[in-house]
Image 1 (cartoon, rainbow, N blue to C red):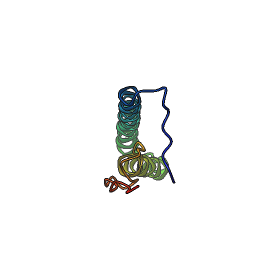
Image 2 (image 1 turned 135 degrees about the vertical axis):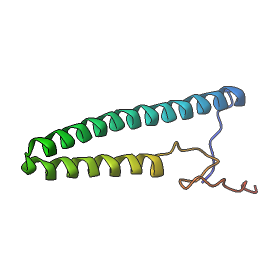
Image 3 (image 1 turned 180 degrees about the horizontal axis):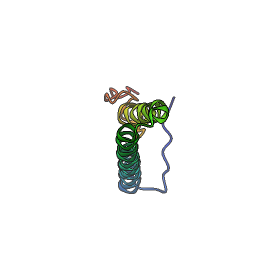
Amino acid sequence: MMERTHPQVPDTVRSRRSRTGSAAVWQARLIMLVMINIAQLWILAATVDAALAGHYSVLLPLVVSSAICFLVTLSIMRWWRPTSGKRTSSGYVRPPKDE
């Protein structure tokens, strides 16, 4: 598919927007990872507290929720990447198209 170019927008402005968008995606990923990490620490504290108090019935839901947090974190780190015209979803640089 042909890439559209806008004659009224200079290339430097377009590349600056692309970098700004990419930085925003990385910042959002970082914030989400920090929030999930804090939630996992809270789940760990609740799990230890429940285990020491002898409330074994709540351990399974806490372990499952911690596993879900881990899987969400893994998916964020592995698959959520900013899209670009030069990179594929796996992170490899696309070869230039011959016109």
